[in-house]
Image 1 (cartoon, rainbow, N blue to C red):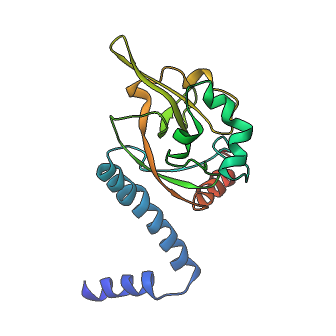
Image 2 (cartoon, one colour; image 1 turned 180 degrees about the vertical axis):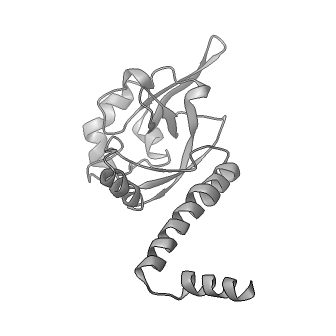
Length: 188
């Protein structure tokens, strides 16, 4: 038994064969999928603790904040969001396709938060809250992508059962690994 375990250990950690590499990739996938990801979900209080940004709806197209606001500020001013208020929001400079976002579960949603929620499709959406208010005893959330002209129909009246969590941290470019894999298997 001891000798068998020693051989397995050598095969996984020291052997440089193609089969050893394949086994290591499979083990890494299983470790992330069934231990690390669920562990982070439990720790962060959400079923999606890490999401890759798959669209450019939150991009600011390379503009600095002031120039981006000149082009887009009127859309937010119509929602009673001033330039000063927006500049204090987390991710006020947006984020890009291919970024990885760390998500925490939360019952406290405020205007300006970037949330992950389910819309009409099966994949979650990550956009900024532009309205968060109590309407006749019901909490009402409306979002908008920073790079979008307005809110889509599935961004109006987001209820708690559609909410996944709030984005708290951005890791640039790391989401491209997931996007590459999804493209490889034909999901995007």
